[in-house]
Length: 273
Image 1 (spheres, rainbow, N blue to C red):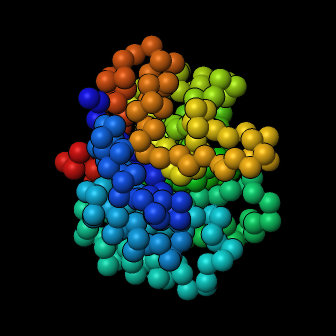
Image 2: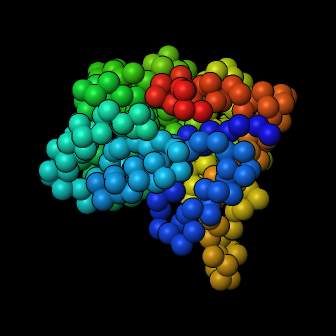
Image 3: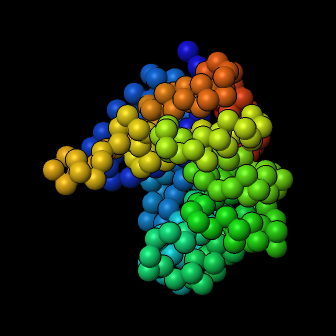
């Protein structure tokens, strides 16, 4: 069986509260040997750390751009203290999930930028890579990275242009591909997954979000009362099979390459897989 790494999974999300242990066990049975669990706000820093230790996985600590509006003024200091407290923990692999989101309406762009840049500074201070939230924000993220360079990381759920992809790669980043690449209509994304160098790719689910096409519930189905799909890390091997098919390689080759790429992007993973 292939050995897969889910480089982005929110196993602490409320959707998994009833059965997170069973979800992780099912993923392991499917061949997902390791998950990276990013935090999104101060209140779940301890949750991702506890889950990573319980399941032999890894975690990242950070404040997600969608949560910057409700973050307190002292939250960056508290995040810095958490990073200081746990910097010796080998399961802490990155600062994340951080970044910018220019898709969701009503967010304070200047506040997002302030939190993003402050967390880049923390990544530099603790010599950690970053896990980036990239949604209609690639150019601004790249600008921040040029001004505050870090030791690479992962551009999560990447869906930008080839030029933006090459810019992230040039700065030492790997690009995360997940459920969105399984949709036939995602032409640009599927082109990137096919044509980018194999050593630029990592795989992820973003579970419980970004379900692959076989789980997706349409707007009409939701309107008729069907609940939204819950993605899970157990879907990663099937997502990987789609990417492998697009590239014309065996799933085993893709799994091995993406495992190596994840360890390059997040060096503390090496030796744990």
